[in-house]
Image (cartoon, rainbow, N blue to C red; front, side):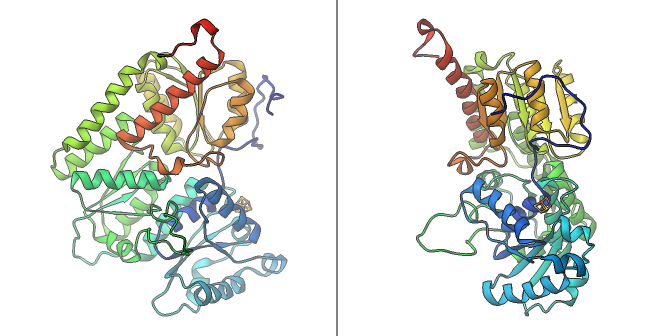
Length: 453
Ligand code: SF4
């Protein structure tokens, strides 16, 4: 399908072809779904809301509930105040959430809707809440939207009552429910009490009970978000998706924070555990040490298939930073690393890792799949790791392909397997190694088709 992509690279300034990101409200909606009894609300047209819900539903294979201010031409001219006030009244009457989390869209931002004033003027039933985040999509990406919504929850709800709760807050970043479960398991095994915000486990991976529940039982409780202001420390996993909320909590409630990488791969998971051990004075439990030993064993066993091979990585910045480090640890070369999200830390961090390992490659933010395809046309790679949209390049260039990140819309079950922690690294390694071996089995001479690899 992408067979016509030209090899000649022309500098593009104002055009994206096959973007490596989605729009801010998608991330804001995802964050809001990770709060218990919360209904995300898209302040814009129904088309925007449908798109945001569709992307999430196609990835998680679950309904992503959300409402819309249903802008028409009138709202575009006169502002969306009347629409959202009516919407909020109807939503509480019909769908009875505890909290409505409003995010803006390109249209409501462009006409300059003043959400704080609208919220002050609304009729909000006793005991119910409305919060908001500004998420114009002509800036940032779904990652920025996620970060802004987390900040919005903290800004509206978290309080420092002066009574420390001894918990660690975890802001897990834009990762799946299985990753959130795995991060929580690590904290449990370490014996560290925590509050995770947001937490989509039990929401977007809820079991089928035969009965429809608009608000599944998972998600961070409102009282936990309020109490996050009394925590001992916030652990922000991923600077792009999580640091904004951690900074807000520090500013508002004086909760200190540390920012660590998303714990993908061996080094980033080590970094998380060592930091937790340092912060708490606790030993790293044997259970986690054993998992690390298993991962090291697997890395050594499969080393001959990774050493010196080149990979192209496309995805969200926090995940790509940690994944690049894992790729290097496996002996591979991250030849092309791209994110669609803007920000300079991305290239700086990955380039520094590559320089330390004596490697060279192209690392760029705010690029698209078309760029990656053109680079591949000029110098091919042995493995492509990206969301579903990479499959067109993989097919056109016959490259082993691992689906990773967001969105993955053409496979099932991925949202039940974590990619974080040592267990997640084992799962990822298996996928990567097997994708390359599948190609070898498919294309090698008949006499080389080995039973044992
Ligand atoms: S108009 Fe803006 S907010 Fe709406 S779907 Fe498009 S990019 Fe997203």
